[in-house]
Length: 336
Image (cartoon, rainbow, N blue to C red; front, side):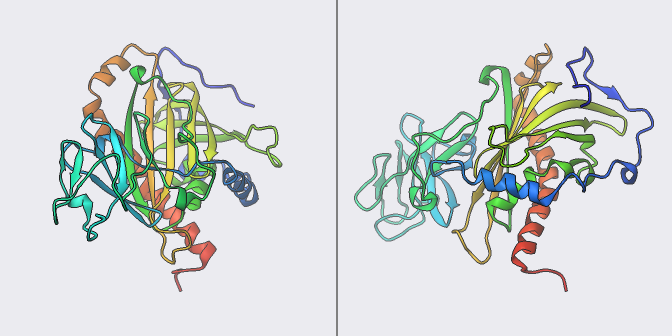
């Protein structure tokens, strides 16, 4: 096993005579389909408690609801009179008006068709939904869609302390199912080949074996984040799948140690839909022990768009990967 990257005084490394893209070490032998599928299968056995990520709390203003569709169910999320999140069906119980287009007044959604006010306690024929704000993401529990034993709270992986980190949330949509998003993230071997503009020197130094009955169902990766053609930041990261629709990358050594990237796959269409669509909601939660990181946190409103743009560039490729996987396993819309 290679020497682990450590937190150096200067976090950048200058790569001398970097090899051309086509001369890097091939990873196809190690990226065994059976290994990836086994990890995917194990992730689907873990409980989610019927919780689904619907986005960032920052997306919900005070004066109007946020409309979302999850697993074919139209819903809204809004803020009550105290500013807390509330969620409910997206159709008015009176005549079915789309509540996403209605205003919020004094913590209640007021239907713009006939003025019916709907609050956090619901109304006959219109039951509110459990909602959870974890400070980075918001979750809604849909027991009918999940068909699992409900949990009081979603399964949230360990994160850096809020007052010592900054975060950004990216959302994209692809024509695939959640398992295709998760399978993409459980294949770390594709990183330096498929994303050479971001990753170099990638090595998977440990991966699950057998049924991972020892509980260490982890992919351990050594990789360098590319800043320029020769300047890189080496880290060690661990990929895990704590529940069926989530994969977490946790930086365990090197610059940004304890930072995490959470990738959540939220189905927009019902299970078994002929043309499924899935939202990937990715939260990047960065931290650092370096003194200059306090300044980065201070200017976080300016940094968040850059962080989302970086995630978006990667996911333009990775959604193509996930969509291709879906097409191959369903044999739909393949080129002639």
